[in-house]
Length: 605
Image (cartoon, rainbow, N blue to C red):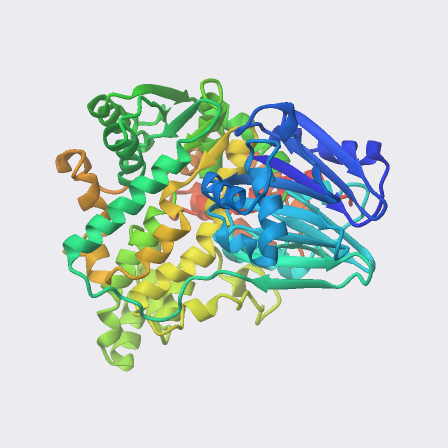
């Protein structure tokens, strides 16, 4: 796990070092630079595999050069195959495996890799850059392209170095729609994210940039006809293999354990199935309604892990609010990133790698909004005129939740209702401009050949999981030089999950049915018969108490008017409704706060 940087021009090494220094937290163990005739590379290393100096980057061999961020979990198998073909290795690193795999397989080398990665290599024979990003988008990859300049990095702030980048107004609107700026866009003009599952070439002579998608989830029904027991066993085998491969490192490894289904399953496989003596880490909140640390402790005791409960005090998270944009570089509104950063900070004191349970909800149907869609789908069997009448009745209620349901019933299709239910703001009220165009690229996953309930999780895999979850985990952990690995989102598990009949994921009103069934092979079912709780922080209460003045000061008219086309009167209405307790608008307030704080740090007025 590291930070990469490069540009298609020779550059003074000192400048490259300055750019690398803006993200030293991604790789504090070594910073390397290279300035060649037609390009410059830089690399911040967090040493995980082969800790020796020989594996530092940029890594050169026979005129080829590479900078790489991430882990290739099956690198030993690929290495063995290349050894049989006569290749000789001078390191035990996965970086060298990528380089030699490219020499042998060309651009198709990425199809051999199982891992999380973002890399760029220089090919001297073709005089081009070849780069790629992992299938699900776990590792970040930003690039600036304009005229004859191509520049790439792991952190957006590195590409902003000594440039006067302009805010992309469309991306600004997308942020207020999603809570993050979805790929391929960034908040800046001329700067983009390489999409998950994509590779590219950049010709250093002609300056031609070409992208190619090498992997995607299926948009067609591919359900297995095997029995439930066969499918369960195959999924279990894939999970065991995935966890085992991610426990391999030359540094101490631990596991995040919340006490929920996903992290408990990963821990159970590591401790019981694989017999590993592991360190586990959970976070304890002082507010009891948000605290699940007792469940984590109970699971840890049953599995015999060395468990660490890390107390999170309000003042700890409040201190992070001012500095969160230092690591996220771009407007980003998932408030659980605060807790994630504290968990990462404390975990780093004990280990350098931590496994998480992220991905189970998207792949196996675990979110509350999925269940709500299942319930509301029955209402859409009613004639449209009946739905509109029901909407008119509910609209007269003083309860704002019923008013939202009333708005939803006016929508023509369940697909559009799903998109509507996930939006943060009413755009028609938040902005003066009407008919704002939002992102359309991923709607094909919402309108595919599959059932509605599979389509909505597919859409989240391509949008929310990538843009929100993986962004949160990468930036929060790398802020403290901790590598996070996500066994449930091994691409083989993702592909297999697509073949599992929906009734095995959602059964008897219960989501993640097959995943829980595997968990119960290791732990008592009674431990998990409680309502699902997300990894949330108590901002709702803080905004009405400890942070009340902070909200008013930050979201002043002077600060809000800097947001293009915003309706300040509507924002004030949202704030007042939250403060008087009539509505819970903490998510909207936090979205605005993080944008304003980001702008203060990165935008020169």
